[in-house]
Length: 227
Image (cartoon, rainbow, N blue to C red; front, top):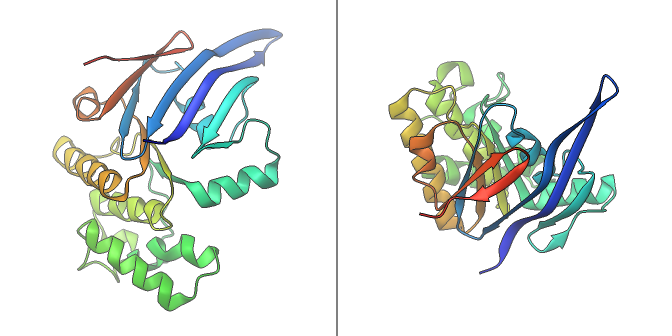
């Protein structure tokens, strides 16, 4: 099965107070279609840096980034933006929904930005909101939704354009244990049914254990946890 994300020997360092800080010292990982992988590790270990590099929001000092078979390692900003638009969806700890928009409008936003007509975008938004269990919340604004419901809208928004890869940064971090488990399960089910790849950064080891793969990052290196 084709890999949707491959990071090969990724190195990243920063300069701070005339001192070189090595965050990533040759990180490697691979995620295939239909796989949900969790990335765990102590605070400050480079988990968010990995997501930013995988999402083409940051550039490594060296190494190779393959997104759905496309080598983005040396791509310019225009190409990187195009790859993000066509192949990558993002889910964050804070849902970043537009407060003045309904759940339907928030979910449809990526398609509207792509130039899809309103009827087509809203039809797709209704379908995916139904898949995350919000068929009775189309017209509700974020302030009228619970934290878990808001995160479901954020997941729907990330998936509506059918990306090859979802990158999720602590997507259940603001939720209680019961709701977090439910949201994680919804995301995992959609990853399987849509046959996309998903990398989740999480501190929740119980949720990580539900993933298909677990990667641990420590001292700038990623290791694969055999189970």
